[in-house]
Image (cartoon, rainbow, N blue to C red):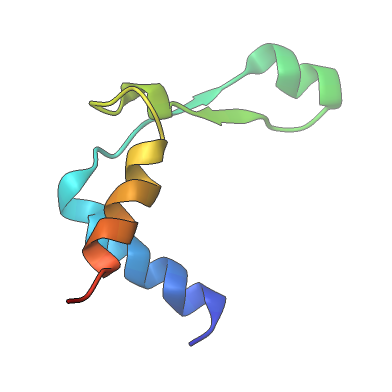
Length: 64
């Protein structure tokens, strides 16, 4: 299985358990680098952290 398929599998497993968090465009940083800078607001998760994604994926991947 290639890495892309692994990522898609992980997303499918955790989708029912995590919130879809918003992106926030930083106008200041975007202008500073003359590009687009976005922040993924994982602090909006119920746990306040992105770590729930990895932990949930690991738990759901375990077998007996």
